[in-house]
Amino acid sequence: GTPMEGGARASEKPRTGRSFVTAAQQPGGQIGDNQHQNEFWRFSLAVYGQHGVAQECLGLQDKFGLNINLLLFCAWLGRRGIAVTRDDLEGASRSISSWHDHVVRPLRGVRRQMKLHHEDVSALRANVQHIEIEAEQVEQAILFAYAQKIVSRFESDAVARNVNEYLATMPAGASDR
Image (cartoon, rainbow, N blue to C red; front, side, top):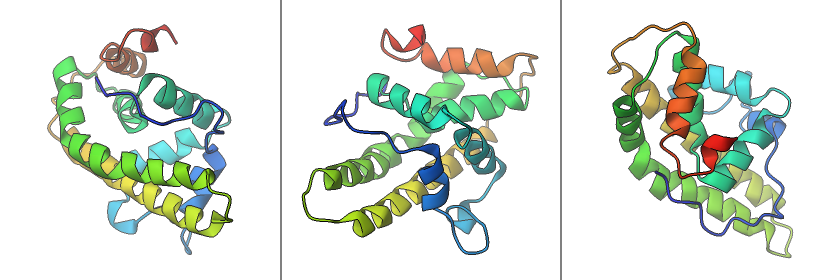
Protein backbone atom coordinates (compact mmCIF):
# COMPACT_ATOMS: atom_id res chain seq x y z
CA GLY A 1 0.00 0.00 0.00
CA THR A 2 0.93 3.63 -0.32
CA PRO A 3 1.94 5.37 2.89
CA MET A 4 -0.41 8.08 4.05
CA GLU A 5 0.59 11.53 2.94
CA GLY A 6 2.21 13.26 5.90
CA GLY A 7 1.37 16.78 6.94
CA ALA A 8 -2.01 17.09 5.25
CA ARG A 9 -4.38 19.18 7.36
CA ALA A 10 -8.04 18.26 7.50
CA SER A 11 -9.03 21.92 7.41
CA GLU A 12 -7.30 22.50 4.07
CA LYS A 13 -9.65 22.99 1.18
CA PRO A 14 -8.84 20.58 -1.66
CA ARG A 15 -8.14 22.05 -5.05
CA THR A 16 -11.20 21.90 -7.25
CA GLY A 17 -11.58 20.09 -10.54
CA ARG A 18 -11.79 23.50 -12.21
CA SER A 19 -8.35 24.56 -10.99
CA PHE A 20 -6.86 21.22 -12.10
CA VAL A 21 -8.16 21.87 -15.58
CA THR A 22 -7.50 25.60 -15.77
CA ALA A 23 -4.19 25.82 -13.91
CA ALA A 24 -2.55 23.74 -16.63
CA GLN A 25 -4.34 25.39 -19.55
CA GLN A 26 -1.90 26.28 -22.28
CA PRO A 27 -2.46 28.71 -25.15
CA GLY A 28 -3.98 26.65 -27.93
CA GLY A 29 -6.30 24.74 -25.62
CA GLN A 30 -3.94 21.94 -24.58
CA ILE A 31 -3.78 21.05 -20.91
CA GLY A 32 -0.42 20.10 -19.47
CA ASP A 33 2.62 19.30 -21.52
CA ASN A 34 2.09 18.37 -25.21
CA GLN A 35 4.84 15.78 -25.08
CA HIS A 36 2.74 13.73 -22.63
CA GLN A 37 -0.69 14.03 -24.27
CA ASN A 38 -2.36 10.64 -24.63
CA GLU A 39 -5.84 9.11 -24.42
CA PHE A 40 -5.42 8.25 -20.73
CA TRP A 41 -4.63 11.92 -19.91
CA ARG A 42 -7.62 13.14 -21.94
CA PHE A 43 -9.88 10.58 -20.21
CA SER A 44 -8.60 11.74 -16.81
CA LEU A 45 -9.25 15.42 -17.56
CA ALA A 46 -12.80 14.61 -18.68
CA VAL A 47 -13.55 12.52 -15.57
CA TYR A 48 -11.79 14.81 -13.09
CA GLY A 49 -13.56 17.86 -14.50
CA GLN A 50 -17.02 16.45 -13.72
CA HIS A 51 -18.91 17.98 -10.80
CA GLY A 52 -17.84 16.60 -7.42
CA VAL A 53 -15.23 14.18 -8.77
CA ALA A 54 -12.22 16.27 -7.75
CA GLN A 55 -13.38 16.65 -4.13
CA GLU A 56 -14.19 12.95 -3.86
CA CYS A 57 -10.82 11.92 -5.33
CA LEU A 58 -8.86 14.32 -3.14
CA GLY A 59 -10.76 13.11 -0.08
CA LEU A 60 -9.75 9.51 -0.90
CA GLN A 61 -6.18 10.64 -1.51
CA ASP A 62 -5.84 12.54 1.76
CA LYS A 63 -7.83 10.18 3.97
CA PHE A 64 -6.65 6.82 2.69
CA GLY A 65 -3.48 7.53 0.71
CA LEU A 66 -5.00 6.50 -2.62
CA ASN A 67 -3.06 7.47 -5.72
CA ILE A 68 -5.65 9.22 -7.89
CA ASN A 69 -3.68 8.48 -11.06
CA LEU A 70 -3.84 4.73 -10.30
CA LEU A 71 -7.55 5.04 -9.55
CA LEU A 72 -8.10 6.83 -12.88
CA PHE A 73 -5.87 4.24 -14.60
CA CYS A 74 -8.18 1.46 -13.34
CA ALA A 75 -11.22 3.35 -14.59
CA TRP A 76 -9.63 4.12 -17.98
CA LEU A 77 -8.62 0.49 -18.58
CA GLY A 78 -12.04 -0.65 -17.38
CA ARG A 79 -13.77 1.76 -19.76
CA ARG A 80 -11.86 0.00 -22.53
CA GLY A 81 -13.14 -3.35 -21.22
CA ILE A 82 -9.75 -4.41 -19.83
CA ALA A 83 -9.82 -6.12 -16.43
CA VAL A 84 -6.68 -5.84 -14.31
CA THR A 85 -5.20 -8.30 -11.84
CA ARG A 86 -3.48 -7.58 -8.53
CA ASP A 87 -0.17 -8.25 -10.32
CA ASP A 88 -1.03 -5.66 -12.99
CA LEU A 89 -1.77 -3.10 -10.30
CA GLU A 90 1.36 -3.86 -8.31
CA GLY A 91 3.46 -3.57 -11.46
CA ALA A 92 1.78 -0.29 -12.44
CA SER A 93 2.30 1.03 -8.90
CA ARG A 94 6.00 0.02 -8.94
CA SER A 95 6.47 1.72 -12.32
CA ILE A 96 5.52 5.11 -10.84
CA SER A 97 6.56 4.74 -7.19
CA SER A 98 9.89 6.56 -7.44
CA TRP A 99 8.46 9.44 -9.51
CA HIS A 100 5.42 9.71 -7.24
CA ASP A 101 7.39 9.62 -3.97
CA HIS A 102 10.27 11.88 -5.02
CA VAL A 103 8.58 14.34 -7.40
CA VAL A 104 4.76 14.45 -7.27
CA ARG A 105 4.27 14.24 -3.48
CA PRO A 106 7.04 16.74 -2.66
CA LEU A 107 5.58 19.23 -5.17
CA ARG A 108 2.13 18.79 -3.61
CA GLY A 109 3.69 19.34 -0.18
CA VAL A 110 5.44 22.53 -1.33
CA ARG A 111 2.20 23.89 -2.82
CA ARG A 112 0.28 23.10 0.37
CA GLN A 113 2.98 24.64 2.60
CA MET A 114 2.71 27.87 0.64
CA LYS A 115 -0.87 28.26 1.89
CA LEU A 116 0.42 28.51 5.45
CA HIS A 117 2.64 31.53 4.77
CA HIS A 118 1.26 34.99 5.46
CA GLU A 119 2.99 36.65 2.52
CA ASP A 120 0.97 36.71 -0.67
CA VAL A 121 2.62 34.00 -2.77
CA SER A 122 -0.46 33.13 -4.84
CA ALA A 123 1.31 33.69 -8.18
CA LEU A 124 4.24 31.50 -7.14
CA ARG A 125 1.82 28.90 -5.74
CA ALA A 126 -0.03 28.85 -9.09
CA ASN A 127 3.30 28.21 -10.84
CA VAL A 128 4.05 25.33 -8.47
CA GLN A 129 0.56 23.92 -9.07
CA HIS A 130 1.18 24.10 -12.81
CA ILE A 131 4.42 22.14 -12.38
CA GLU A 132 2.67 19.68 -10.05
CA ILE A 133 0.06 19.00 -12.74
CA GLU A 134 2.77 18.45 -15.35
CA ALA A 135 4.45 16.01 -12.92
CA GLU A 136 1.11 14.19 -12.53
CA GLN A 137 0.90 14.06 -16.33
CA VAL A 138 4.37 12.46 -16.53
CA GLU A 139 3.17 9.91 -13.94
CA GLN A 140 0.19 9.17 -16.19
CA ALA A 141 2.49 8.82 -19.21
CA ILE A 142 4.46 6.18 -17.27
CA LEU A 143 1.19 4.37 -16.53
CA PHE A 144 0.06 4.74 -20.15
CA ALA A 145 3.31 3.05 -21.28
CA TYR A 146 2.84 0.35 -18.64
CA ALA A 147 -0.68 -0.34 -19.97
CA GLN A 148 0.88 -1.72 -23.15
CA LYS A 149 2.25 -4.62 -21.05
CA ILE A 150 -1.13 -5.56 -19.60
CA VAL A 151 -2.59 -8.65 -21.22
CA SER A 152 -6.11 -7.78 -22.30
CA ARG A 153 -8.74 -9.72 -20.38
CA PHE A 154 -12.05 -8.32 -21.55
CA GLU A 155 -14.92 -8.09 -19.09
CA SER A 156 -18.23 -6.29 -19.33
CA ASP A 157 -18.08 -4.51 -15.95
CA ALA A 158 -14.34 -3.95 -15.86
CA VAL A 159 -14.47 -0.39 -14.43
CA ALA A 160 -16.07 -1.41 -11.12
CA ARG A 161 -13.98 -4.58 -10.99
CA ASN A 162 -10.71 -2.69 -11.54
CA VAL A 163 -11.51 0.05 -9.02
CA ASN A 164 -12.48 -2.58 -6.42
CA GLU A 165 -9.27 -4.48 -7.15
CA TYR A 166 -7.27 -1.30 -6.52
CA LEU A 167 -9.20 -0.45 -3.33
CA ALA A 168 -8.51 -3.97 -2.05
CA THR A 169 -4.78 -3.11 -2.08
CA MET A 170 -5.38 -0.18 0.31
CA PRO A 171 -5.31 -0.16 4.11
CA ALA A 172 -8.56 -1.13 5.84
CA GLY A 173 -11.18 1.60 5.61
CA ALA A 174 -10.57 2.80 2.06
CA SER A 175 -12.66 0.04 0.50
CA ASP A 176 -15.66 0.91 2.67
CA ARG A 177 -16.22 4.08 0.61
